[in-house]
Length: 354
Image (cartoon, rainbow, N blue to C red):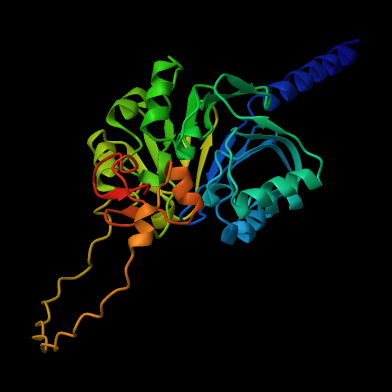
């Protein structure tokens, strides 16, 4: 009888240990900010392995995206989001659709006639998939322990950038706000919508353009971390104005062009990163060298200017908005260029649709 009692006691102890051990295993969520050069792409992997892919960079980055997803052993994209029709956001989506099983697709209702966008629509049609309109007020059906809300576009805008789908991801007490190419008009409407936009991690809108991430919006989000998806470009992204706003608030900055792909991991309480924060003065010379004397340049004869043909016919070029400029492949427009107007140059710096 005593032996039976001891056996029963040991069995109870063993059974009681197993569930306690299982309960201590922590689940995590990962957000990958994939380096696609001057473009954007974010991969979210949930606690049970479900996936969300937001944008896929430019056409030239198709192989980069497909290879990266395969390296993560991904076979299905449960939710695919094209934030807006710009080529450096949706260029790789057709390759993703062709190479992986796709669940649900979200894209804003924006008219675009570019070949890149048409390729995406063709890939969707080939697989008999349907597109759900991306708009504010949607809660996406994904992981049970995470909340994915679409908080923009709130309204309808002339500029395709402001039509960008914006995602607020919450996991436990941690949160991410993913902005697409949203600019000040949409930012203001998001604030007016009274949506809770306070987030730990902010994807800076429009690659750090000065027409995005206003001080008012940044104050409302109040992030601890900021990611800038940017590559080599002629637009001046990220601008000094945006970088100053971030550094003034002591926000940790991460950049694809300086650090490559950046991965955030959260257990719902804390956030860790695959890279240390980027700092503007982080790179310093290891030794001080005496400056070399600058040779005096030999003056060259000034060539006679060749008269340019008349450009009067181009003076009649008129673009309705920046979306039309981008579709024509003319962005950015500088003051004096055919089609430039103060209406398109929102910040009055002489460069429109940057």
